[in-house]
Picture 1 (cartoon, rainbow, N blue to C red):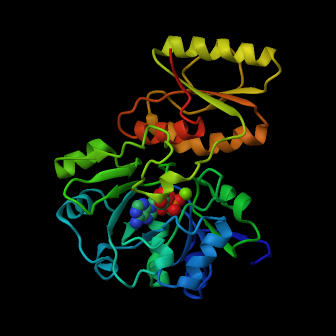
Picture 2 (picture 1 turned 90 degrees about the horizontal axis):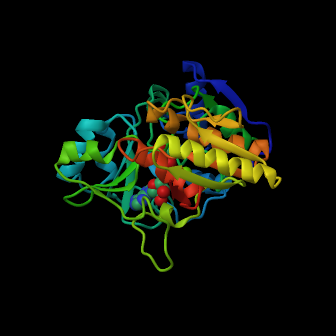
Length: 346
Ligand code: TXA
Ligand code: MG
């Protein structure tokens, strides 16, 4: 493993060419996308792909998403593009959506973790697409965090997790969407959302006339449950702080959070609130989720907020829930997992 300092470079055309060369030679690059930062490698090079698992500490049975720079690059990677997948591609690519499709033989088993399918994504990020074009190969990229940490939404987060493990990080600024792409099983007639993200169930239904949301999106996994996406099996990032989510009328939520805060603080806990800017928590420690009027703010800030909780050494976190409409489902899926789905209705 590479123990030298990782270089972070602003994503200029020159830096993108340098990163593409590293990828062509079988190395790893931290790369911005519109969702979260990815840890990229040449998707058709098994040895390069294995380096991703090593750098992340990722279980080998969790498959990787393959990123392309245009739709023309897809046919050699898959056996078939079903009708629903075509509709989704036309409507929402480039964008924060991964489609699960039947894989072609050229996709190494290391990428698909032995499954017969592969996740394909055409990202909206210009930097990501330029890098893929310049590298001249599809790029396998999971989120660039160490396994067990939140996905990185800035180059600094990638550096914290990957310094000394990879040669280079391209800095493209903070990610706009802030939660990982929607993962949609598009192998059948009705698309199934396996992981919610920026492309919402409402949007999928608008394009295809029907949608299903996997039952595990908003509930914890029970013993013996069979999952349709290996990622669902793993314990998702949870901060060290015991995390509780409050949902209900705004005034009730604020009152319940303040009461619990004071009780916990009196008992010697270090407490922080993850709350919206418009809401008055009377000077208690708050990490901002942005504006309550704009759930996209919470999506963009959640992972950085969770990292901050750990850095601040908090032992308890009290979070305001977001509505489940639109991107809210993705926010509540990640926040719910961070709280082991401890959601209190008040
Ligand atoms: O936004 C994103 O999707 C980011 C950026 C870098 O593109 N990538 C990302 O990758 O979040 P990762 O590896 O952290 O998450 C991929 C998820 C995992 O939960 C994995 O189990 C699931 O997608 N997945 C990948 N291939 C699959 C397949 N063939 N069938 C079912 N689930 C799959
Ligand atoms: Mg991940």
